[in-house]
Length: 453
Image (cartoon, rainbow, N blue to C red; front, side, top):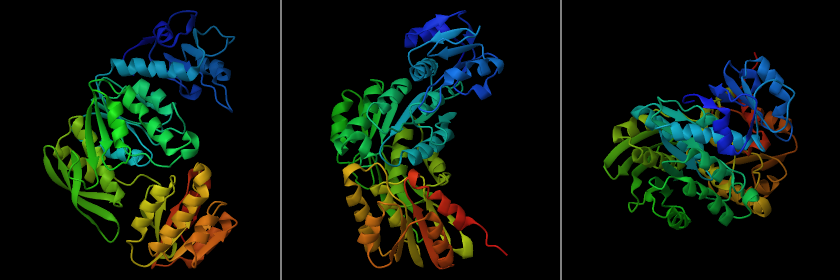
């Protein structure tokens, strides 16, 4: 955090009431277990927890104040607020206003975590860069990330996810990006937004929060790009594309090796640069172009881009390749799943020599089109030449039926794992994928286990 804070300063920002002394605060935390002397504890409340119950514990750990939503029997100075999350966002806004770092906000239906990692890697070549850790891209994670800003940071790459309307607006209003990037808009999480139109509208919330002198980096290949351009008003817009030379940033001479890694020429307003990615899949070419655009608009050079992109390693659970039991190959894409990301992963799988097996779990949050989408993935895998489809989950039955011969549905994860372990061989490549609720990482763990003597 940057400098000291006071309860009254936060109270003014979130319309709270100070109870007791207006103490100076070194740091704010939402975890009562990691309090340090001079910290203030922000009591958040969720479905299964109430941080107000932990105020006394926080005081014992060294907290000098607490932000609460109900009166607590303690001598600790308090800030009483209507909503703890709003108070957290208020502190994040204060921190962001004090910072001189350029803030790059990233959202979209797919690719935002990979783009965040790529952009962060590029900008880290140019200066001290704060990057959203792991998957802390929600309405709690974004303000907590902003609280990590220091005077030394020159850039901050903030990922923003959402399951419903208003969440990106909430996060972006704290971050106030100098540069906002939207990767795309598709039917991922359609259940929470009602329709693709709702998703497009929600992703555009980041535009409204971008500073008026800021820049927007938009996907020229997305069918909805002009809606975002209109929403941009006076802000500068830069467009990126997979291979369309009409965009400001685009790729050319793309080649994908037999193991899925991509090489291409990155074309930018200031020149071109050959890039060799360590990530798999043609979709990561577009992610790389998007990241390059955002980073260069923030001030990175072409050499920063090359060094940063070529040093990026696969994010765990996102098309990372490993050797499994009996010398089989295992593509881990278990982080999450949507129709478009399933297709992208299948496109990578089909490049590998040997027998290819798609091990699939259900896709979640697809609303009334769930059966249709699952069926289309089964068809897509069959048409791509995938030899076998093993699936688990109620919705994945529609994948199996659409795939046809070579597909098998399992009623239990144990049966699925046993079958995978049985057929594993040096000539076989598994792709493991499904939504978080499908817990497909359990299959990965078993296929990575060393064989018993």
